[in-house]
Every structure is written in structure tokens, then in C-alpha cells.
Image 1 (tube, rainbow, N blue to C red):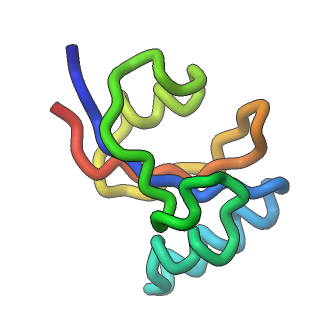
Image 2 (image 1 turned 135 degrees about the vertical axis):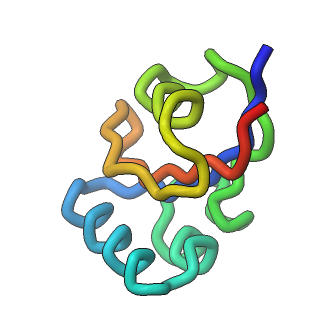
Amino acid sequence: MPLASARHILVKTKEEAETIKHQIADGSDFATLAKKHSTCNSAKNGGDLGEFGPGKMVKAFDNVVFKKPVLTVHGPVKTKFGYHLIQTIYRT
């Protein structure tokens, strides 16, 4: 079974996610922005979700983590929780 490690920033609106994504693209630190803006409990860890396998996250989240290029910030990705910016750190 493949495993992946990812981090994310969860916010309420698509606009907020897009603003944060632009800040990351301009050189701002992902973990710092996660601590400041993310509404997920993982915010205190810079958005780090640790290692997990397929099916542990909602489908839209899994699709990014297990199918999209690693070390790229993807999103905004809409789920029932809000809008995510997702970065897969590694995938086995």
C-alpha cells in the first residue's frame, strides 16, 4: 500500500485560499502561513498531517496527495471542511 506525507492549510473561502497560495508563490513560508491561517488542528504543526495511506482523507484530498506532483502546492481544493492548499511532501 502506498503511503504519503502531506501538509495543508484549511480556510473557509476560496478567495482566502487563493490569497495564501499567492503568498507562498511569492516566497512566504508554508508552515508559518498554516500556523497563522489554517482552521485545522494541524495548524500548530505547520499544517503537517504526518504519514497516511489512501482512504484516510476525503476523496478530493486523497486525489491530490496520491496523484498530483509532490512538493507542489495544489488548490484550492474544496471539501466539506472548506478549502485546502495541499502539499505532498513524499509518496512511496
